[in-house]
Image (cartoon, rainbow, N blue to C red):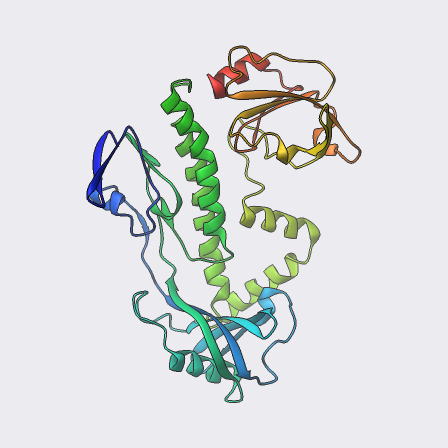
Length: 353
């Protein structure tokens, strides 16, 4: 934000502010930024524990996550092994009722859930960590409000299933960092900073949609139709194509922005400095022009923000086969390939000024 802000009795001045201050964002509240979406309808608990004793219902080996779902005594639970004598337990009331996130999780509450779903023979031992979560799904309408930009949980909240919030936050930062740096240094095209919203808002909206779908599938107290849908999804996920699609969606690695190529798949290369991998070129936060056909190319007066590397793909480099050259953004998405109709200089100007 243009101006200054007090911090620890001092003052920080800046031209821009990145609001990455969590789901209860103070910046979002002070700016009165709308945060529309779905209210919380349920709460649940996630806990890591070492059981003192186990019934036969407790799984002892890794399996499909859907196979861990159980219900009983008005509760549902997922208990799955994550390490030697260490389990992760997710549980809640079938009705969806429960205390708010600010209420600490007690050992007695964990014991009651284990008894209800896995029988009185299952006793918790050491409770290493426990917290509550809900299924609210909200997202700011714009990821940019003047000189304030939103990223991470400050931009959206959703049910924490599959670690997707971590992926979203990291990719928000990767998307925004180089664009903001270019804007501050004065070389970024006028529209570059706005593309943070254009690219990241739809990515988070997709996660909100499929976390809501996952929440529905997790509901063991639902009617028989929900159970039938869950069984069908379990069968579909055993198909390689479906498995690949869902894993790409949940990881965010299948994401492709409008007008931009896919994320570069890491490949082995040989450069004048010897063998390397594409992921190691470069680590400076710059863009990368990778010439793969032996033809040197020019980046003009952009050498301070785009590095040019001559390289030769080694075997099994199908991801770059026939490309000739690749222009790679700092967040590893392909901005241009040698097979595009668009001239290289046009792509360089669009992304690097």
